[in-house]
Length: 463
Image 1 (cartoon, rainbow, N blue to C red):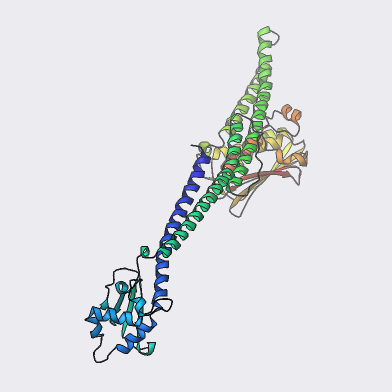
Image 2: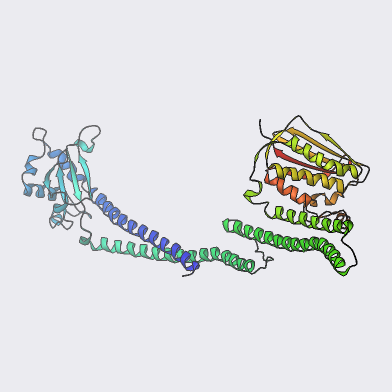
């Protein structure tokens, strides 16, 4: 059974049950209401009988004992003082066509029957009997009750009810047809976007991420279509990034592998000898490969929970000072001074080795792309529960339009110059992955020293 059929049947069957139940309740209510209406109409013609009963009441002998103990007297009293519709006299009433004698009951003030037929049905109408026809605040002398007659006793009444039942059945049938049509329209309205989503999902499953669905709804299905389009766009970007990632990785691995291959082949052919210079070049190529593989590994596992599993409290100032001491000889050899501005101590919850790697990457990046003579400034300060680290360097500065892309994998503002300086294009990407894994943030901007400013923040821990 298709989803369209299921939705249609669910709506149609529910509507049918509701309409059927309402029709049955209306029919029963119509039957009872019509009976009560007839009773009220009949009881309104007993004014004369009620007045005569009030006149016949003897306060010294309450309860109309002459009528209560003599059924014949009660019947004669009713026939003498009741005229049916049309103004017929007692003689015409003697035939009792309305079965008055079988339906009329005289009750005492407490509701106990005194004369007439016993109360046989649950449907009845009664009216109080009072002096001068006005009870006011005084207690009634008694009550005159008229029980409902069987509907089969009146052909005209039965004809009227049959006509009403037929109209009700026709109305229910029309309502069912309208409900069925509405169920069909609703099922189609629900299923059309679902079918479009199904077709779009098949396209995505086949690897076609260009599929988009027209967003022409503002309900929950419209939200689902919007999420589908976002997913398709994300998959397309991810697929493109994956292709670029593989291409860039292959390109980066190719250079050191080519150097190693050339050196090895030169040694095999006897063109070069295994002297310290040759071995140093081969070692440099191998170290470049190792760094690249390590960076790729970090980026691959950056989203996993175990990436920064060793989160303990460390002094960020001490980590930075150790990184500066390691980088100072290389900076001095490149003609670059380093200036530090640290507080006395600043505790953060971090993976010490990962944060030290961030300092190393940023300082190496500053040394690699700062002209001599130059300066690198490392500043650490606290504020608003955050530890803020800034690394500034002197000229040259990257163009403003490339600043937002500096943290992309393998991105270089000047590709040839970066490769000549030994960079893999992953240092800033690795740093961003580590900082974000520590619930921090990192950003690049132009430095007031004329070069690049890289600032990252980490949540500060209380001592």
